[in-house]
Structure formats: C-alpha cells, structure tokens
Length: 179
Image (cartoon, rainbow, N blue to C red; front, top):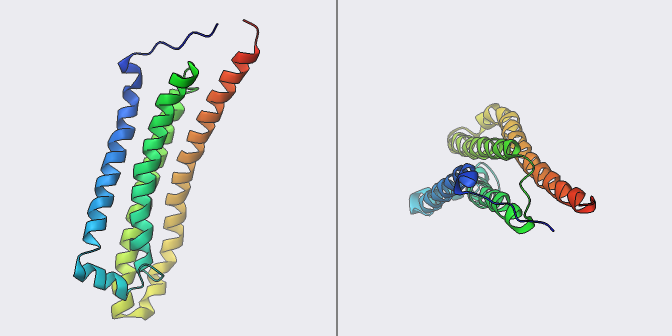
C-alpha cells in the first residue's frame, strides 16, 4: 500500500522564493497599471501606438501583461504545482534542484523581458515623437535582447515542465512495479 510522503515545513521552504517573486511581480504590475492610467502617461502611450502597435505596444500591454501573468500567475502556479503534486500523489518531486533552476531561469527571464520591453518602449517612444528616423537604429537591438530574455524565460518553463513530467514518470513507474 502506498504511504503518503511525510513532509516537514522545512522541506517546502524552497517554495517561499516563488511566493515572494509572485507577490513582487503583482506589486510591480499593479504600480505599472496605475502609472499607465495617469492622464499624462496615458496620453503619451496613446501617442506612441499603445495598445495597438508602435513602441507603446511594448509598454502596454506587453510589459504589463508579462510581469502580471508570467511573473505573478505562472511563478505562483509553479509553486502550487511543486507543493501540491507530492501532497496529491504521496510521492516527492523528481528534483528539487530542477525546481530551483526553473525558478531562477523563469525569474531572470521574466524580469529581463519586462525590463527590455519598458526600456525599448520608452526610448523608441520618445524617438517616435522627436525623430522617427532614429527608431530603426535603436530597434535593431530590440530583437536580440528580447530573444535572449525570452529564451531564458523559455528555459525556465521547459525545466519546470520536465521536472513535472519526470515526477509523473517516477510515480507511474513505481506504481507499475511489484511491491
């Protein structure tokens, strides 16, 4: 008969950083949302294409959505999965080391992605209004920076997915073996 995994509070301490990052992301996203509805800021964002295109699109909705949905919701979901999967199955997570990696890769990825969107959105937005001919000279750096930060973020997601799938594989492999 399968006995549930006995856990201590210390075993889940590694998940605190996921919760802190989630709360921090929601805070940043809330401040971002409040700032972008200030009439002067909203007017500037609208003048540079938000939310439909142009540099304004990088700030609202892309940066705002990513810090909330990836930084807040997804990282919280990762923590919930890493906590609940052992509780529901009675078996441990495949690798706490992979869980750590998934956190750090995802965190660095979402923060760099968010920051790049804001910086390029602001710089290109100001150029769009002052000297539109200069926008391409800045925008040529946007692709590589966004690609690197998005790749870091994707590595975090894939590590998380691999860890969950390996955990499920461990569970079903052990369920099939004779006791």
